[in-house]
Amino acid sequence: MRQLTNVELNKLEFLTSKQVEVALIEPTATGLKKSIMDATSIVRDFFEREGIHNYLTQLQGPENKVLIRTKIVTGSEIIRTLTSLYRPNTKKGDPRIWISGVNKICQPNDIIAVAYFSGVLWTFNLSRLDLRSLSAQETPFARFINNYEAKENEIANELLEKIKQIANKGFIPSPYQGDTSIGRLLETELGIPINSSKDPDYKGIEIKSTRAERQNRKNLFAQVPDWDISVLKSSRDILDKYGYYDDNEIKRLYCTVSATRFNTQTLRLKVKKDDGLLMEYSSRDGDVACWRSSVLEKRLLTKHRETFWVDAISKIEDGVEYFKFIKIEHTKDPLASQLGVLLDQGKITLDHLIKQKGNSVVEKGPIFKLNQRSLSLLFPPSEIYTL
Image 1 (tube, helix red, strand yellow):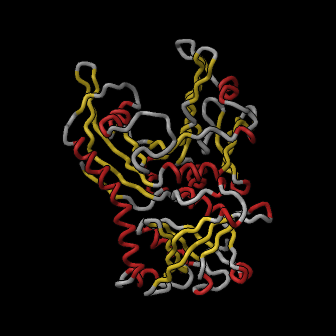
Image 2 (cartoon, rainbow, N blue to C red):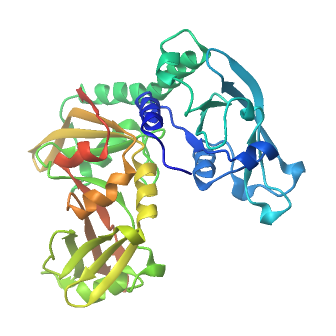
Image 3 (cartoon, helix red, strand yellow):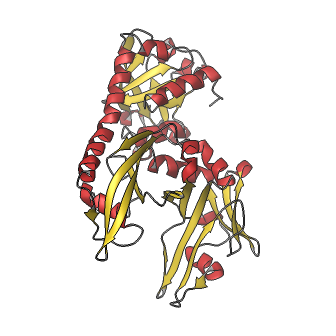
């Protein structure tokens, strides 16, 4: 897809401010003439993420075509139509999409935005429509924006009320111990099963709980290296080469790795922007491990599409730690393009948490962490709730 103009970017920023997630399509002259458009990876990921359609499981041929109800915004009016999702018998079944009637509202290389709400695809020409003006009038588009925004806020408001009720209990004794005890306590109070899932915690909202006095770094996500392109091929290999024995004669590698300096284990990060890679390397041995930037960006967007960062204060009585939840910072839609910059500047670091237990090696990371003061560099303006 071509680069967006400043005007188009401004319209996209408006949609983001209204919490409307869209997929962007650039119809070509040939596509408009032949009524065919490629379903790019951006489109396919959008359909899968929204639970609309999965091209990977779709069989080839017209008999397997999927039709989705669609509304095309023309201005103050809409066109009711259908969108076809299919894989042809030719060209290895490359995924296709066609919005019937879209050629009536666009020219070749216009940017078409597609959103999904209540079982309907909403389609509008990002290049030509004045979205801000339409949203300020009594139009179908304005009603769509208002309903979409209200729906997006519904779950957040529900979760906020639940945490407020928990906060009203005051100090709550935690049956758990260690750094994870605060998060596990809040999940238990919310009725969320404790598990190791990488998915967001509450109906698509990630919950991150921390002690208010510990505000140096925030956990973003855990992601192992892409072993297929790494010099070392497992966490065990990394532990064997850079681990150390603790006072209990347990071999472990617990350390922070940054792009700004080598740590005591000789490890450092390097962002290779032109290659789309994050490298971990050693001043002693050279390259160690590697992550694809696209994998890290997708992980960030999946984990933190919407997040409640919950702060609590604690006290200890008779050997038991008590927590009182006091504040929430509510963020949405991280700027994935900033990930590489913040890694390069040392604002995002990674923690290795590897240790040997008997004959097995346990890896709780690597955990990518964000400097607390850099939250506004990764996320658009947030909401603060005092509990």
